[in-house]
Length: 235
Image (cartoon, rainbow, N blue to C red; front, side, top):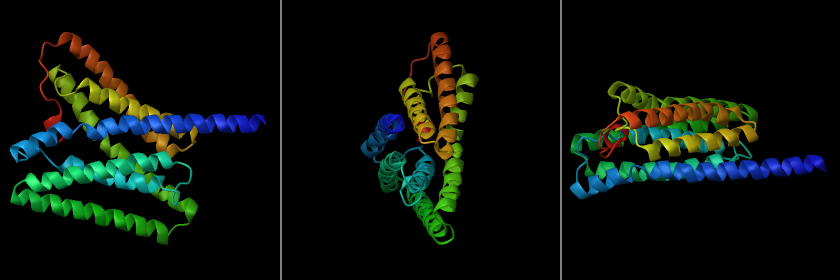
């Protein structure tokens, strides 16, 4: 009876953490919307880069595959959040291609096709050459590598804040939602006893804490007027 109660509590807590992570991640996925409103309004991508959306699409696809029951039963919240991420990134890439110049259209289209082909290879290889246990480990390591590579952006921003002694390029709402998303999935991974979830999100949580600490430190010493931060650096 006690065991069933503990199991029920764990299920409720993990579900709550997963739902919270999905909600906070939605805020992150929506953060580039002002950039794309500007692109559509000006009918030009200007100096914005489309590469981060390509990288995020690949990351979302791999993590989506890892979260599906065919690979990892019982962590559907990972699949839902990355499924939402795939939709957002696909829309951003389509809009970017529609409004950029010809040479960048070719580059972005080529990169998009390459990402889809790479993901297809991962899916086929994991299904053909691995049993269920090995498949989870194989895709898990790929998802961890993909997530850790995504931390290059926060590290760049942290370095920029320290160098400029300004929080202009690190808006609070974005840093805070990044921290909350990582923290939620850190808790979700711990409750699910899944190192492929809690390890990378543990790193993300630490980076989020560092960003928030830097924000409050430099915000109190800065007189800058914040513009549309992170649009060029993130986009």
